[in-house]
Length: 168
Image 1 (cartoon, one colour):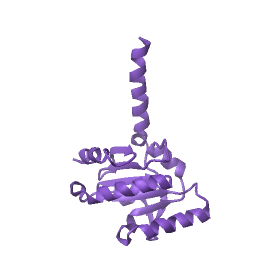
Image 2: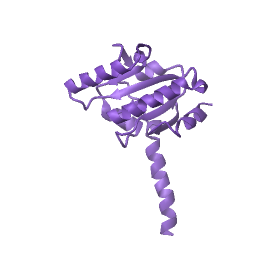
Image 3: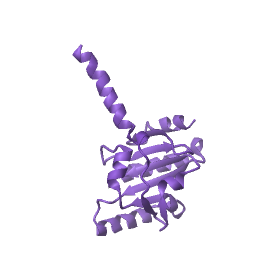
Image 4: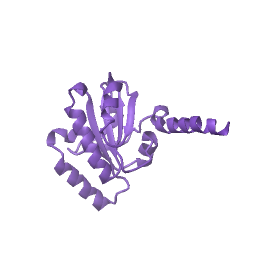
């Protein structure tokens, strides 16, 4: 009897951890785009479907860029806004400036309005997104009303088809 309850209990724990954002409101933290504009993410996404890709480390940032390129290149996802975010609150000021300069240099001008740097409220974002590792990008698909349609973390390989399925 004991063994038969362990599997369902673990499944419930994993499902509960995976839907952390469903029960919370997205943090209304002001960030700055790479182009220098102030932005509050829930407001910027309102009214259209959007993919939000957050990274908490350099390793995750590289994988986040792959996600963003894949989503932008996929014709099935035309019309879906893509927002990338670098969560840098934990980085010291001088390092943060160097990281932002490096990201800006690598990001085409046309995409800099949708790349946001957050320097505040990282713990709120971690809680909202359900972050368990800094090594992965955290990816969310929102509908026009702000409802989470899909979320995942890790490399885009194998996960991007799930995101597309959730949109249609």
